Length: 107
Image (cartoon, rainbow, N blue to C red; front, side, top):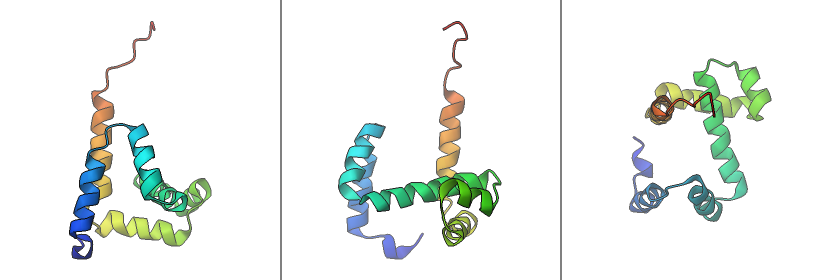
């Protein structure tokens, strides 16, 4: 973990984020906390990470997301040498998806 980001202020921000319960609450909070460009950059990096884990090429990712090869490379470095944050979230989302009840074909 990068010790530079471990501050009391960052702890407070993370505690605030952990109180959010719905996507709508996330939209409301992050719209106040981030600029539009900051939020779009975060979401772009997340999409890049998903595509890298799906074995997409840099070209496919750049065309799909508009991310630069420098951004793709930075995200790839985080996936390979970072704190495993992306993979932790991907695993949890996959688990949630697996636990969803199957849709009733008669509905």
